Amino acid sequence: MITYALNSIPTLNDTNNIFAASGNKYIQLIIKDLIDYGATESN
Amino acid sequence: MESKSNLYIFLPVFFAGLLVFFSTALSKEGLTIANSNEDLYSESYNYQKVINCNGNEISIPNFLYLKNDNLYVQYLSRDCNVDHLEIEVVIGPNCKGQHICSNSFFSRQKLYGNSLKSILDDVFSNNLKEVKLHHNQLGYLILPELRAYPTHLRIVWQNEDFIYIIGSKGGNFDDLIATVNDYIDRHNKE
Image (tube, rainbow over all chains, first blue to last red; front, side, top):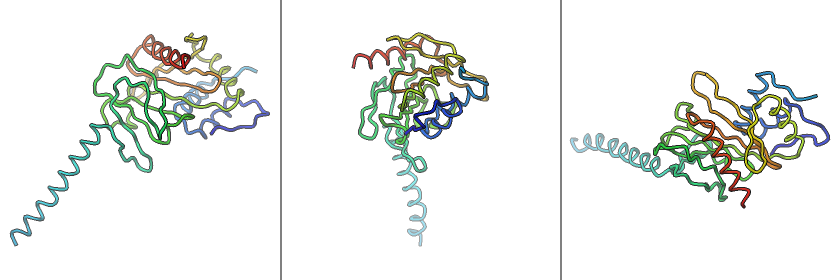
């Protein structure tokens, strides 16, 4: 199950940790690729 | 003495024969194959639209572009439930974990809360090419990479509750979009 603090806005790195906990390797791979490429969220 | 030595020859041959027979039968019929501490399910891929996982019927995409008749759909029991699904379509019955014989995959993951969806939509839209899908859904394209082995062409999309990813090797963009739209259409009729 994916859980995180509901009163905070997750960052891309948070999503990486969240999906690592889910055990879903395909989502983890996409997030990892995005982080490796230097992808960022809007401010 | 001679009968005893015959027995030493007969028994190993007999048990080896049994082993070959049952392993061949299991791989052909697509039954459960022991895989360390998890059960790996492998069944022939015949364009089925659902698989039975742990007592639940789970919908999977119809990979219509696949033509090979030696394809199998494989999944681990821990990756197959209504909240979390990962399946792989592979060439041959015993390919799990080997990149070279992986053809396509599909992943469906429950999202808990809108914050996660929002941040992913934000990152995807800032960094990936958008693809318009049926029922006003928006997907994002991830091109294959050149590595030691070919990687998948991937499309990721989200609705209110789930994030989906589909990937294909050797197929083309239009085939993959058609597969995604067929899956979305089926679920919007239900």
